[in-house]
Amino acid sequence: MSSLSSSSARTFLIRLTTLALQVPTSILVARFLGVEGKGLYTLLTVLPWIVSYVVMGGTDTALTYYLSGGRAALRSLAVQSFFLSLFFSVASIPVYIYLVVPHVLGDISSVLLFISSSLIPLAFARYYLLSILLGQEKITRFNYQYMFTSLLILLLIIIAGLINGSLPSVLGAFAAGHLVSLPLALFWINRAPGKTGKNPSDVDSLRGIRLLRSCLFYGWRGHAGGILVTLNQRLDIFLLGALSNPKEVGLYSVAVAMAEVIWHVPMSVHLNLFPRVSAIGSLEGAGKLPRAVRMTLLISLAVALTLFLAGRPAIHLLFGAAFLPAVDSLLILLPGVVAAGVAQVFESYFAGVDKRQYQSYSVGAAFAVGVLLCVLWVPRYGAFGAAAASTASYSVQFLISAGLYRRLGRLDFMAFFIPRRNDLRDIYKTARYLAGKRIKR
Image (tube, rainbow, N blue to C red; front, top):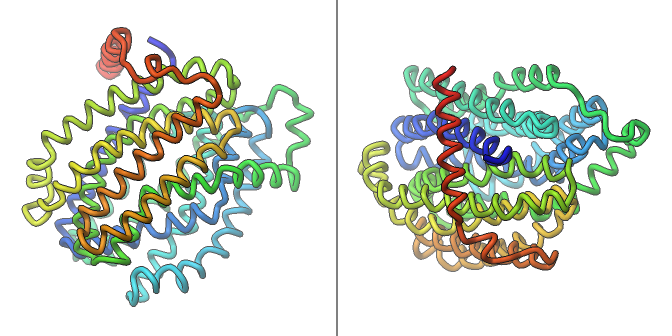
């Protein structure tokens, strides 16, 4: 059992536990607010994070890259991230209030606008803290931070629902959960040793304006792809809000929440592969990639098949009969989400070897396809049209990512996409290993 397989499996297990906390949260929001209220809640929580990610310019990924490779000191990166959070928050909040909200949500109450806007500085702080943890290669703590935040949000939403179950109180519980979880990330960062780098003089020279320029250069070179990844994953919801109605958003958000269970598989691989490739270099990292792609594909297909068979009864049981129309969107989304997950593994390698522009190429083409098809299909077919457009877009992303990796001269179809007997044996050994650790605990 390889170290990448075991660490990715541990990550997947923690993320499944996090998902087990997020599912009842989604159910409670749907029960408290109804289909239309669930749609508004989704927009009010998703849009601030999109704005924050776009404005940030990829500097969060740069923190991970420079810290994991020992290219800059932790203290310098932490100071830079603090001031960038303040600057970006001041720049982003007016854009959100005066440009984004009027065009997507129209008139909303001042209370909802205030709570939703407060998510922007929380997003910047969260992005940077998690990027530092990832750069320290503290993958377990990185994922525990997600789990702890999800637990807090669940508990606070239960309290909010017991008080009155209104949209402002539920949205406020979501924001409070993110705020209260930030000190834990700071605690874990302080406990972890900082990266010193292979050449201390090089590390010392990367600080201040020079470090900022380096981070901006690294970030922006692939940030177009990062922006498009985020927009591509949430474009369907964004356009549903603009071209359809909150009811369709509410239905579609349920389908997306279930389909994105699959994304925990490639994300678990990405969180371990990206900093590792950054630290060990392109040649050794390339040796780990075929197995990572095969394992991601194999496990993702198994999860997709489970959702295909259990999707309808699960939605009916968990969300109620009013959300059953979401089943059609879920089934259409499944193959696209699997394809996007495999593409993400290739893009993890690109980021680790400072080829982030490759992600921009693949996701740029996918984004163009997604926008065109959403504009054509969403007004007519609603949530179903958004799902079909997303699957087509994700498929394009996968094909181009694989093609770009082939330009590096190392893509063998049999080695990357045909599972081997050892893969199944490795999955079995890893499952036994994780089960044994849980029993010992």
